[in-house]
Image (cartoon, rainbow, N blue to C red):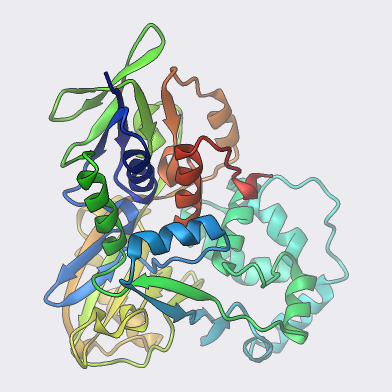
Length: 434
């Protein structure tokens, strides 16, 4: 009799694991449970009237050859290669990210002068435990106060002193992406500005549809290899017998029998009283009747008086993500207010005013605004999160995987790499936790 494998969550991690297991082993049955009505998880794509909107700026980039080979195997010939163009909005202007000498030179002189003084006053030998400690030790108090403190509060809903140092190790490095860029501290950042190394970060992106196309291709392969994907099936937890997993409890379909469970859904579902917290994101997908002047793929907005955290321009990933001569924006706002969750439209007027203020769009060009709430977009690393993880007692046959399941702030390539390692019985290291 075949062993019954159940995977909770049809995001990139769960689908990669299911696809590899069904492709390589015939002595098991694989069932994937997904609460949404389509695959992708946090890598879903919304379509409306010919406009494609991913959940933020999703694209594939990796320095891992095994992951790259897998990406190209799944995509086949259905991909395009695009270069990176990302910005940060600082001091009222769009500046290249990672920062260049040209973009930094435009900052106010007092900011530059105080940052220069910080080179000689930082103390990196003291004990570091919080995000604030890390940023101040690496970049100085000036840049911390000028950018990181306000952006962190706006993005996470927490002060920088309430977040674990791992939030910096993960978040700062993830934002830079390219390993050729050294932004590990203020000296390295300034050295990179004065003596820049050529950086041309290349991404893979599906040649049709949005990022969800990759996940749909995975799902097709799983089903072709006799795997089963149950959409609209919300996993609630696991059942055990004598300390071993015996099944997965669902909201509408009873208990799905299982000999082994890989859990890539939020770990807070399994352990609701453990204190794990996830951030939720409000998306406003905006269709525009004509092309705007946004020359970036995505841009960060750190100012506390600006509602949104990040804008994404789908046209700059692939021109046919919008109808001919049209344009669009994906606006990301962290949900820290219950009123915003219940009625996102209350933000409409303020958001449009601010988008016009930063010259991201002209209000008269708006065709429609499509509001979406996406839950569990980021694990929130408070000061006790490691203790919570180490205190978990898992029954035999249960493994936590992926961003949400293992409470790991990662990118898609890391989730894929972890799933590939698990499917082949190899160890996988979450590098920023070293």
